[in-house]
Image 1 (cartoon, rainbow, N blue to C red):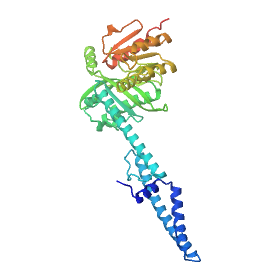
Image 2 (image 1 turned 135 degrees about the vertical axis):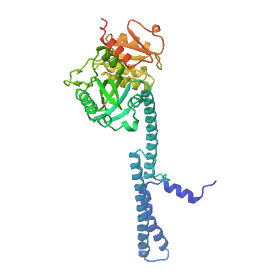
Image 3 (image 1 turned 180 degrees about the vertical axis):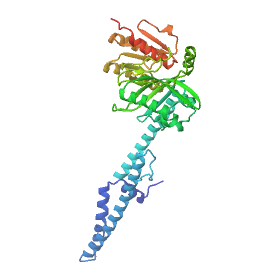
Image 4 (image 1 turned 90 degrees about the horizontal axis):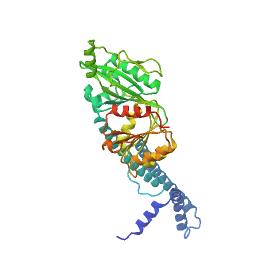
Length: 396
């Protein structure tokens, strides 16, 4: 379909910068009227006055149009800030304001894709957390729950809506809630992973949990909450108490000093205690992002400083830049295998120790220098293996 002269002028007008548009609207009426009156009016004063009036009217109309467009951009910027779609109609001009609207559209699309990716990642992480038997939760600085997994909800008969945003005092009553809050504060003050035995009675049922809690840090290194991993030891506790013919004791431990270990009113049943870290640096190499983040969360909760790499390239860069006490790597990685990485790193730093994880049989990969951990593994298996390898004497 051929383009008409009017359509060509409209397209040209839309592509003009705002300053050129303003000059055209201000000067064109005066020039046209002066040129028209010059042929039959000896004094162009009338044409000049009419031109000025027409120019003023054009500039008022132009200013109002600009104001409406700027107000629409302000609404779009507010919507973008709130994470909502843009609210104004799509711009058909390609001047400065039109380009700004286009940039807002592109930014909105990028943010929408990122938000969708974050939601998908959160859903995948929640699925991983929900498939573990341990009770896992995140809390803010006021001990209000930010996240709970399915095991938590099943254990206490709660939904996500009932737990998220509420504190243990609101969920379990003042007596138990204040004791749990005291444990949380001990972790936040000591800034290290701490292990507790916590007892809770819900709807007449008594639960005893062995809990490991660790502070959570933001990108600026500030603590914004804590993560907890709790294992139900009620049955073992009951069996031990029955053997000892001792009455049930409701006991939640307390930390006697900021840097000291937790003290308990009775010993934890042998074999239930999780092995904690001492701030050692662990390089975790896992190509499945969600599995890697979950394992990193567990290791940080246990008290380790974790560096997370998704492939051999990132692992090599992190190994060069950081002191690594232990590398935990998956066997199958993009490009290079975990064994290839261990071979290279073993020659560069004899003090670094290695754990190889895989779903394959241990006999296929175990060596004198490599400790094998078969997937899937329980939290206690991971905690005990990492602690055991780090406690081994370094090769001379």
